[in-house]
Image (cartoon, rainbow, N blue to C red):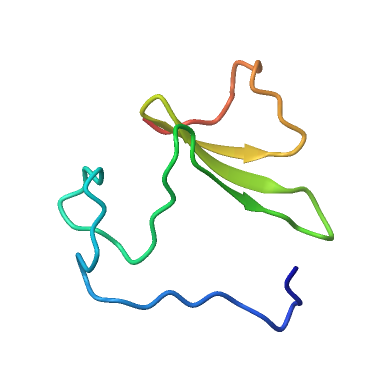
Length: 76
């Protein structure tokens, strides 16, 4: 568990340690790899958010999830 005073700093050079599965022309400094990678943003005062990637689409999701809604936000 982290405290509010802690933070993650990722520093590196362009294409340093590029993952062989990375389809980008140039790699970044951080990669999250999986069949449906997701970053969760947990707001202790308000609703939580996530960035989720699956089946070639990127989703920005807020809690509570309602992925059946016709206006479900996604980027393609």
